[in-house]
Image (tube, rainbow, N blue to C red; front, side, top):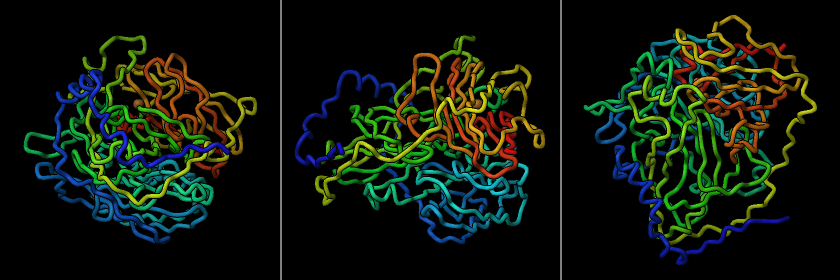
Length: 488
Ligand SMILES: [Cu+2]
């Protein structure tokens, strides 16, 4: 078996940090954005490993840094919520206690669970307890949980209700991936900060209908401009774009290469090396970064600028009718890694083949379904011309069937499309963008840029019943860009 060896090259390569002219210009772009001086230590969420536990959501006044406050909501008194970590096969009993004073229900994003356990918006409770009971019967991976009430998901996630849900299994364990202090969950979320340092959520009508709510400051694990002290070793970063609407083009300073090993539905078949990775709201990326290349130095996690295609419609629609925040595609600095000069970490071998994965074959598809994403002047973004209705069944699929879903974006803004109750494979994308490294694995959320058609294939093996699929731009979702999917 071919293997890639990550050698710890302490003392080597530390003299090559002179900035390229390209990078200098890139960083000067982000210097026009609010910049922090990395005063805040990166918070690391606590973990829940019990099989029976409470998730209690309650309001809280939270000081996120010296100058930034959030009138928010918390799960179990923390932002982000605690990381739920379990092995495949575990049976869980989770009591969701809702004390936030609004209707809510929890969705386990990426998990395939029975319909009444999936957090369909019709299952909201306005107070009291909702009892979840389900078995984790799927691949190891980086999943997450967040509220899913109709019309107010955006506000509740924005104000603090989100956490990681990590599943482990034997196949992944055998790889001996970096763990413990060498495995770091990072949830990336943009927020808009008022002059008095208060985080605000007040999407305008154009923001609800057009762009979504774009913030001006990026929080990582709830902290603005955090730093994290690390060794010059190999780290596994489990990254979640938990933002309402913002897409990131993740990279490290100086184009430090990194290796993508997993995404929404777990490990990729093969590791892929890259120096940037586009991540839309709801998507996850599991990456390995070799920080021995920047021993005794620092490196910043950044979002590089990227273009949003106009979709053939009016150019500049986004700015003309859109958000008050920095536009989609703007550059940002996210956090800083402060790299020490010694590590006791063992040399690590990464096999070329990470996991045995078999995706459904196109020829096995029972049918193709077209999912049209378009903008109606009066109602905003729709799915096949309609806004969400709680009890109307929009797509009915036969249990056990394999389908090709073709997402066609006829609008002028990006739509990250999320389907509940399945993991799918992206087959292809029209235009020049092609597939990105995370799209070589199992996905539950896929970015469909303006003008693009993205074809996906999925097999519906979940229990019969009602689920939803929707845009994971949470303002779009709250505005009705969601549909019922019934498995029969
Ligand atoms: Cu959308």
